[in-house]
Image 1 (cartoon, rainbow, N blue to C red):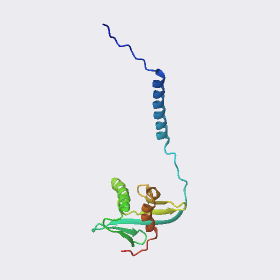
Image 2: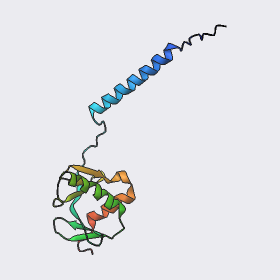
Image 3: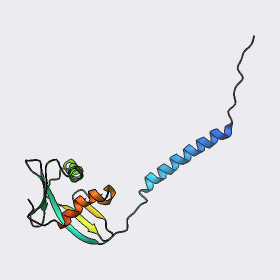
Image 4: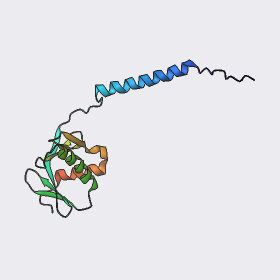
Length: 151
């Protein structure tokens, strides 16, 4: 008894279509990668800005200091203000990586279109606060108007 299996012929069109789709996807991904970002934000005027330094204290708190006057405008108690601490940790990590010290203040800016940004002028890194929701944005927004002489 001879039991040779007959070859199964898979239709060519689906194979060619899938191969073409994969090639097209790779081509579009490469084109997007090499042409840079396609999203841009129209520049807006600064409405309010404040230069701030952040200083770790021995008790675990973080002092927020107005860089122009040297006055403490707020203190984040130990174990609180997780968003503020996480944001600063990311910015400071970049400074340490580039061996930049804490002397240059961060720029906190409210823009005419309502956006709020925290920028590190030494690294060029900018955090758009609106991306983290209103509650987290409010943490930094209050630092724009915080009165000097806080604890």
